[in-house]
Structures are given as C-alpha cells and as structure tokens.
Image 1 (cartoon, rainbow, N blue to C red):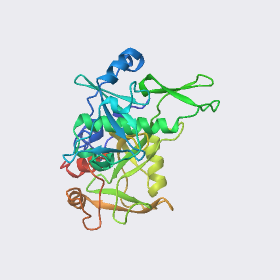
Image 2 (cartoon, helix red, strand yellow):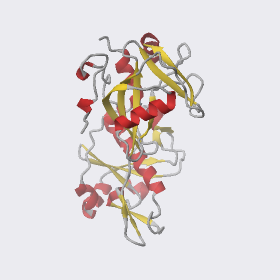
Image 3 (cartoon, rainbow, N blue to C red):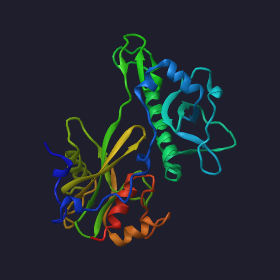
Image 4 (cartoon, rainbow, N blue to C red):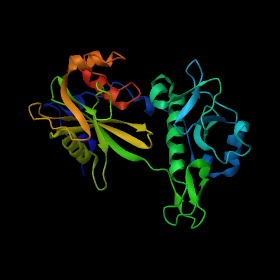
Length: 314
C-alpha cells in the first residue's frame, strides 16, 4: 500500500526536505470540540441550546459581521425555545455554538461570506463559520430521502437526517478534492486560469477525486486533463475544509517538465503558464494584480501552498 511517505523525492532531495505549507491553512485551525454525547443526548443538547450562542447564516452562506470584524452571535431565544431547526457547531471554553439558516436581513451589521473574511477571523470563529456554512448547505440538499423520496427530519443536533417514510438515516458528506502545486523542481510554478475567472486571476490546479481513484491518481489525471502535462514526485502537503458546498481539499506538490507543451483543456482552462518564483512572491505580497498576476487570497490553501513554495530557499 502506498503511503504519503512513499510519494517520492523532489529533484533528488528527500521528501522531508521539500517545501511545505508556510503555516496551517486558515480554515484548518479550529480548536472547537464536538462529541457524540452532545449530539445524541436530547437533554444535554437542550441544555447546550439554552446556554449557547447562535450564528445566523443566510442562503448565500453569509453571516452578520460587527464593524470590528467579529461575527455577530445571538441568544437562542431569538430563534425558538428548543432549537429544533438549529445545528450544533461544537463547544469551546464552556460555551456551545449553534448555526441556523435565515434569510438575509438588516441588523445593523454587514452580511459577509467566508471567502471574504475567513482569513481575518480567529481560530475559533473561523472553525465555527466553516462548519456552519458546510453543515447548513448539506441540510438544504438533504430534505428528501434518497431511497423512497419521503421528507426527512433533522436528528442528532443537526448531524444527521432521518426519513419520515422508511426511517433511513443520512449523514453529512464531504467531497474529497485534490489541489496540486506543480513546479519544475527549480524556480518556476505552473499556474492556470479557469474560463470563469477574471482575466488576471491564476491559481494552482485542482479537481475532484473520482470513484475508485486514489488521491495521487487524481493528481496525475487532473493535471494531465487540465494542462496536458505529466507529473512525478507527488507528495502530500496538508488539507483544508472548503464548504462550497462541502469539499475537503487535500494539497499536494508534484514536478513536471517545463519543456513539455501546455495544452489547456477547452472550456475549462482559459490559459496556463510557468511563472517565476520572483513574480509569485511579488503577487503574493499584493492585494491587486502584479504584472498581470492575481493570486488566491490568504483564506485558501492555495495561498499557503504558493507562499510555502515561494519562500523556500533550498
């Protein structure tokens, strides 16, 4: 069986000597705790609801924000006596946190999304926001039983749904996806722009894992499909939840031959280029495009991968 430690070396160096993420991805920092007792004991859950704090999330995945940049939390009584429509996000420092789906409304605060503010939140709020967006999005899509078509009801404090017809239970799903920084083993990285992105927006390559496929197999297939090159020396870097709507992004690095022709996938990749380390550094340090290059924001694992590669001096 192949393990992460077997993925190979980069340019003759041992795997352990290759570049790493510059730090933990921002949406992977959560210290929030969640136990089966909290989810499965109705009396315990009721007590957690009464003494907890509630985050409203609208249909676009936005939440109210204070001018200071903190999330706006509400008392449970604002949303009903028993919390039957809420989802338990977890507990931290003796406080239980919940999420509820609402329609966006004025509250004296701005309603903002995770992509825009995630990198400015602390570890606790970033983790709670991420869980709320992903879990509530799953509930929106799981209202009917996949087996018999009957309506489903929320159970386990929002961590499962039970069919009202056949009693079948469904649990939240996570879609595995890979994201890979392809470099030439020297000072260039391969960046691409999707057809739906602005003219100067570029990032590393990514794609969903298919049925029966390994993670490293997904890396090889997606890179070849998207830009037409073969990769080697695949190694794991780290992961990050990405609740849009329910992905887990697993980051990899791989090496490709810069002399191999690039063939962007029609209808998917508008353009792809090898970019120098110096140019990437300049673009990472700017919130505006630099020399036609605009890179992902700090909330994404793509940013952490590019920063780790760009700062590697070995």
